[in-house]
Image 1 (cartoon, rainbow, N blue to C red):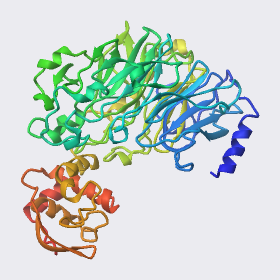
Image 2 (image 1 turned 90 degrees about the vertical axis):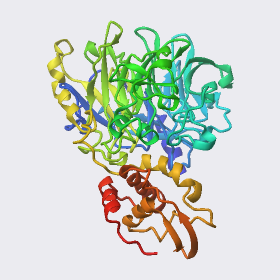
Image 3 (image 1 turned 180 degrees about the vertical axis):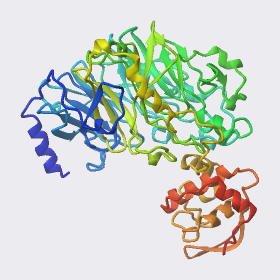
Image 4 (image 1 turned 180 degrees about the horizontal axis):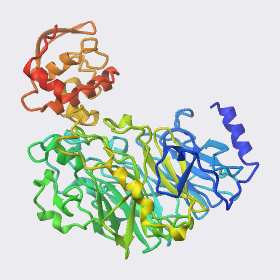
Amino acid sequence: MSRSLLLLLLVLTQCKKSIVRTTLPTPDPDNGGLFLPDSFAAVTVTQGIGPARHLAVNDNGDIYVKLAYNEQLEGRGGTVALRDKNGDGKADVVAYFGDYQDEGGLPAGMSVYNGYLYFSTVKYVLRTKLTPGQLIPEGKTDTIITDTDTALFKHWHSAKPLVFDHDGHMYVPFGAPTDAAQDINTAGPGGMPGGKGLDPAPDLQRHGGIWRFDANKTGQTQDDGELYATGIRSALGLAWSPFDNTLYVAMNGMDNFHNRYPGIFSAWQAAVLPSEPLLKVTPHSNFGWPYAYFDHMQGKNMLAPGYGGDGKITARADSFAIPIFGFPGHWAPMDLLFYEGDQFPERYKNGCFVAFHGSTDRAPYPQAGYIVCFVPFEKGAPTGKWEVFADGFTGTDTVFNTSDARYRPMGLATGPDGSLYIAESNRGKIWRVMYTGNKQSFNAAQLSTMETRKSRTYIKAPDPVLDMVGKGNEMHGRMLYNSYCATCHQRDGKGDNNRYPPLAGSQYLAGDKKQLINIVLNGLKGKITVNGKTFDGVMPAHGAFLDDQSVASIVAYIKDRFNNEEITVTADMVKKERVTPASSSR
């Protein structure tokens, strides 16, 4: 989109107000590809606006979405406004705006509060005044919070979603810089196999928690807020419950238990653990990261392996707050919503919706998540069960790698008529979900079809043997590469231009995956020519301490990351090369 066309579009959007209608639009014949409980239906608001993150709906029905990054405007105009002018449920006007620059990471956060549109980048929490009837805000952008961390763009979990209470406070997480609190200077944010967590964890001084701020004060830094709760690794899904006036958080748990501690956790255990817990967050609560993790199958906090845990020891973990519910590991909860509308049956006011972005690191088992679920509450607490509310995002029966999923649920919002809006991050498609039946006659039978969806490979608990797919996983490969290969070949794969040859763009490694498998397994010595330059050194064998799945993951990562080759590498391929290695020319 050209800048002149963008400016014209912004002018046109001011001309007509959107109209809030009491009648629901006609659903798409296929519900936009979604599977929903009986008597629910969906209309596609937009087929795609770019990498959408969180969204909010104003009281006149206008929709605002935060993008991860606006490629067309080189990081500017990262907020998208959508308006339905004729009441068919579809966006007639789509406008990109914003006088700020997105940089680094994956920002999240979009909310309408007290007549302002609040939104976040990785570094800032911003707001702009909304004018009734106008789609695009006319005023300047206020900076509410600036993250002054000098290492911000090197850290993990730096997104700043936000939520408000009823007393003028805003809650913002400052996520943990690392996965499991190993020394970031030596192990990087992902950690190293067998590594120990620092004790006490310095990450907790200014990270790994939720801070509370004055929602109406500009020019704040983290020092102006107060630490509200700690021990929270990464939180993208936050919601203020109107039913008990309490903050709730859906937390992302730690990763890579098997890769870091293969002698303690099996690949299956690492696929389902640790839990993605639902937290009821009260002032000064501590949920234990990095010292503890939640095991939803045992229903208790366990001592983390980086601090001596073995999957059985609780010890120190007993002192931390217990989550109120636990989802399977690595589903990646991205948004949380307590339904306050009047369109859905009353039961949906007793519980919360959760959008799961889907896992990246469950190999050698299928990736999982990629749904929107509903957690019923009873007497103010979860019943212990959860329901598939919206499915069909993946577009495939089995997700081997995250890139296989067509859509990844990301944001949730309620419209003024009680419709539920769902945004996904791959293309920026948005759905509006509506209830078309009789609310008073809603019954459990209408959920039966969705219950059968739990047999899908991306939802069900994987069978330890039958569901092992054995494909190399690039997420695992990245961590292993950074642990075992980056010292010589460098994190960018370009080598040191002296002793260690480049992997990036290497003609020597192009095409033949068997050769690369053998090099990782058995090492390499003697003269080789890479991209016209001769190297004469020794690469040690890694096959003695890396299992077949780990080797497959490293090879898959190198091929994709450094050679732009999307190939399938399986543990069986590696196993065959251990037995009868193919000859490789030098």
